[in-house]
Length: 291
Image (cartoon, rainbow, N blue to C red; front, side, top):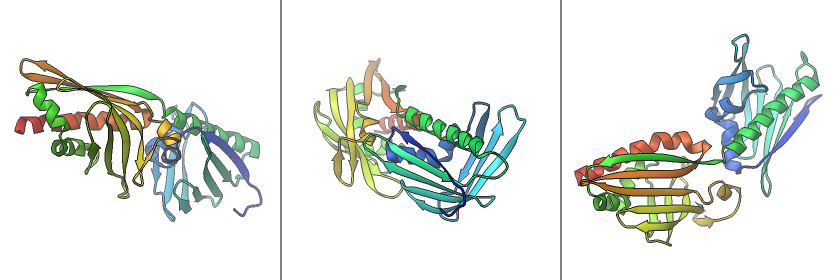
């Protein structure tokens, strides 16, 4: 970066690189951390992450007394590695992401403006970077979600429909079109839950069937990831999910079944599951009804 003056800031985020990148670049995350103090917030963010694309963060005082748009144009973007952009006033910003053994080093370099002191700018930008670190690390905290649905069918039918290959693909398509499993549902067995990402790359979760009592209870423990056709059982990506459980309980009630779902998830995917699981269960109910 060519500049007469630059300010360099950095932080180390204990989270997987892919999660750090999403937090930095996706509007739904930007609005959660992009503020230097608690009396300011970013109620809206737009981000067209590509060379020539625009970024626009609407930053405002919570009491409504002040607001402004922070805008820029991207000069270079290398996924999970580098972002360079030019602020609307012509100043340059460079952000790098460097993966280490247990964290991601985020370095932000920017050209200061002339209206405020360099120390004030350093303090403000660092406060935002610190907020980013805390928010992203907090995303790794696992919490339990619970869903249930009454299905007018015997528990045996619900159990078999939910777990057979054909119908599993149908009801889990709500989460991701093309989802499927490979392996066995027997207790102690290894099982893969697979699908394609937005770029068409296949991957998923490496799991183990912790318990399977036919027509009553299934417990799945997530122990790793699948990427590039290989099992990944160590590293920050795995640590974020290791030991997470997904439990299905089937309770018979007068010829019907109360299906209960208990899922461990981190904060990043909580809203996604809260939207998808009820829809998936409704689809499963419909499948059971039509069989």
